[in-house]
Image 1: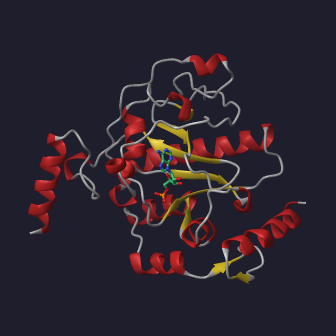
Image 2 (image 1 turned 90 degrees about the vertical axis):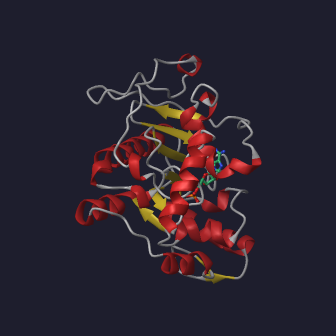
Length: 266
Ligand code: AMP
């Protein structure tokens, strides 16, 4: 019954040119690399971080972190596919792209939850989520992780010396297409971080480090995130990840965390 429903959904999705809903497309599990990107656009000359094609022998240079003033509107009904739409139409979204090579792109998060917030996305649009990841994706996901680490090293050296960073996945993501968060840990600094779920999604084990995901995929051949465990983390009370003090509201949590973070970073 479930299989039939999924087949119908995928048939309809294919008909409308949309990606299949939720689950991974069975026929599209393997890596499906797209054509290597064309060489650089206007942002190159402006000192942005477009790549030159990203050959491993000569990694592309990284530029300044400079989010666009506005992001292209996404139709309300397809908000969950906003990341997919960006990968599928890079030209339309070039101002939102911080870096690209032949296998992945890094885009500015449209609702940053800290001073720096980027998402590294595979150019293989069949890799919709961690659920879809197989050992065949290991190499691609290792590459995404290396790109994320390079970005962190670059931003710390060039622009954000005082910030610390995290690189990882949300155990239960809200958007389709695998996305690796690269985020600074000054969560008090963003007005976009407004809710308990936001706080918990970046400060608890709901945020799974990329290294942990890669190790699991390598060891077990898949990555399973038990929903009940992670839903409980998302719903738990507000707690400082540095000193474990508890707070009743986001404003009080952020006020405390700013002091705690500044003390640790001194
Ligand atoms: P997740 O909870 O892991 O699925 O995170 C999805 C991320 O995508 C969040 O950090 C959102 O702020 C971000 N986001 C949502 N819509 C867009 C968009 N149109 N462009 C870029 N980032 C987005």
